[in-house]
Structures are given as structure tokens and as C-alpha cells.
Image 1 (cartoon, rainbow, N blue to C red):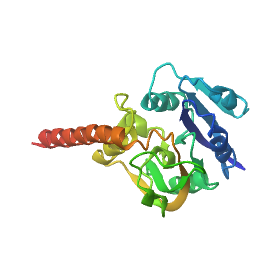
Image 2: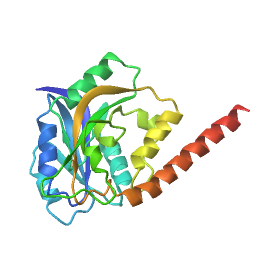
Image 3: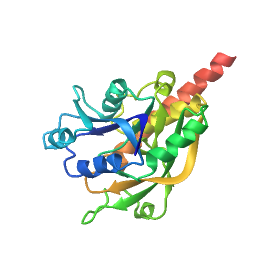
Length: 231
């Protein structure tokens, strides 16, 4: 299995239930990452113990709170030329890294790529309130962290994740890349299986809607500022 200059960041808090499966999907990649960094958000379960049981995994304890801060800490810790992200409860397909990295090596102008994903319902679980069950059918374009592979310099240009957002931090970041016309590509491949279960914080519709509005307002403000600067 070929190694590539890529760092994988897994931000997790109290994820002992699924973390091993997520790590396995990374360790079974056709292209192995140079480093796997688990950012432990002060877990009270066996998350850190599970992460440290893997010799190829570094476990970094988060001092602050929130998913945005965890992503930012992971990026600052990472040494790879490319950076990829995975949630502790999701699974990559075996060709995830190889597909995106090969494409980006062939297209050096691209700052990042995303791909398609598919939801699957964890056995014995009901979807979180507000989650549309029709989403369990078919695949979807993944403008989400778990499909992202980015050159690390893109974070210098676009910035890090907004720590004032407890969810929708990815929407805000992708909005900034769009506003800045950052070179990217959507690959047609299905590269992520996203687990739906009873504890999905990211699928909490009510909380997401509040943060989505904040992210959209910020995008509108940036566009207004850009228009004023051109006058």
C-alpha cells in the first residue's frame, strides 16, 4: 500500500461506539496517509484509549471546546501536504484517498476536491428528529468535511473554521471558498458512507438551521464588502 503526503484528522468526543470502525476504514486505504490525528474533545469514555491502541494514530487532547476548534487544532498539528477529514462515526470507501489524491496530482491548480456520499442507517437506530428519511436513498454531493481533501495552503488563504459556530462550520468554510473563487472539483465517485444514528449532532436540524443562517449572513456581508471595494 502506497504512502502519500497526507494527514487525516478525526475530531471526536465520546466516540468509543464507532471510532474503531472509522480508523479501520482509514488504515485500509489503497493510499495510506502519513499520519492519522485523532483530536479528542475531552472525552469521558474510552475514546482516547481506543485511539492510542493504534500504533499509527496520534491522539491529541483538545484544550478548548467545539468541532471548529478541533478542526483548527488538527490542521495546525498536521504535517501533510494534503489534509483530509473523517468523522468518528463515518466510513471511507477503500479508494477514497487514492481517487482524490491522484486527481489532484494531475490537476495541480486545484486547491481541494470533494466527492459523493451515501447515508446509511445504523441498525436498531431511528434517525434524529427532522432528518428526512428520503435522504437514505441514492447518493449526494458531499460539500462536507468527510469528503474533503485539501492542500494545506488553502487554509492560509481561506482561513480556519469559525469557532463561534457549533454546527454548520463546514457550510461557512465552503461558502468562503466559493466567495473567494477557490479552484476546486467535485468528483463523481461515491467515496463516503455517512452513518445516521440517534446521537448525530451534525444532523440536528433545529441547531443546524440557526448556524446555517449565521453562515449565510456572513457570506452576504462578504459579497457586499467585495462589491463596495470595487466601487
